[in-house]
Image 1: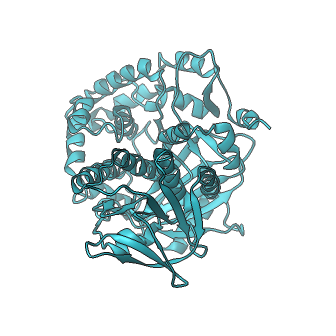
Image 2 (image 1 turned 90 degrees about the vertical axis):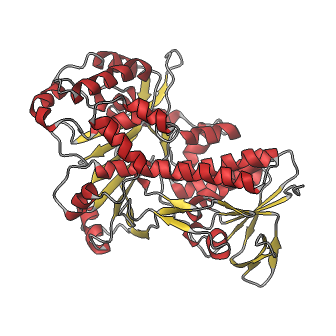
Image 3 (image 1 turned 30 degrees about the vertical axis):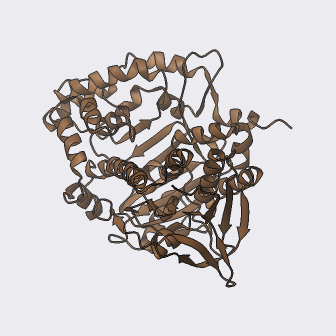
Length: 502
């Protein structure tokens, strides 16, 4: 018989720690479980990831938190998708949009897929994803993805937010739900004979006990790594980037509803619109450039070479632990692993890690078999998202720097799953069939894979000159999509009225 968990300790705060606290507290709210977050007053949080996938909305919905409450407190804006600029050099495909789904796509996606299949056979037709999805039109017009009540189609969307403010907001909500908070610096942990953690040791020599521990201590991985010595699986062979720079810039009157990812010399830059500023950054590989060179390149791109705007230099450790749930410890957030922020998956993986664990917690199944099943599922989530990110680099056609040529030539870092996807595409087979065969649609849906491959212009070279003219041809869906967009409001104007009732 397993002893029921009565005390859960979360080590570390930040967005990951407080999100985990809220998810677990909501799951066990009627079971008398005491949840305590122990947060160091001397260790800062990374606080850079400022974008999300649409799944974040489910997090707030499950807690009954309205957008009109949390978004103003976090300077949050809506996100309809991501534009990738300069990743491809194929004519007509130098920029493409990765859409978030809407119900309108049920009408337009089949046409897009048919055009892609025809283009793969050499037909002169339009196959750029931007032309086929409502979310792309909303992004182009700076429209919020919230439609008038009479509009008959549902839209999904993500958010942009100030990560520091989000962490503070989640902290406040967790306390309101009864989560306890202790400000203390942890220096060590104690284990019993079987290796389970029994207590953490504080800087003043005192200790705190719990039945179960959640490690949200960031890259330090105090419990899952330092104490339990859980092996780490590096993604360095797959993904070369290991550093980043972040800095703000002014935002104008219009607030975009998209993240922009622009290819740079040795990585890529992000541009994220918040209500009061742009968040900018440069993710790069230190094997190909220095921190000073990267900062100069980013400042030059932003027109801030002479500005005294401060930047933050960050190191990244890409990969994941072998066991996210090891003995009586669950790793959540940076302590469990990290994927570079190309597709804004950090909070998504945090959310899924905590939510799926709660399914086992609610059933009272904390057995070794449950741990094995759980760890395999979370590993698959990490690896599935990694593969989609690898595909961006492997399919690039840039030859201006050794960095981009090395990414395109990298064979050692291509997992078998991705090799099968590339083969299906290049052979003209149904990509959806391959995605379903691998059972990986829950990581990235079929529409996302089509958008990436077609957006990068992965079509037969022999037909490129003829097919390029197809990009300028009238798209019969264009008028329909534009009419749909008339039901949406200006983003900034909508945000200004989207305030909590006083």
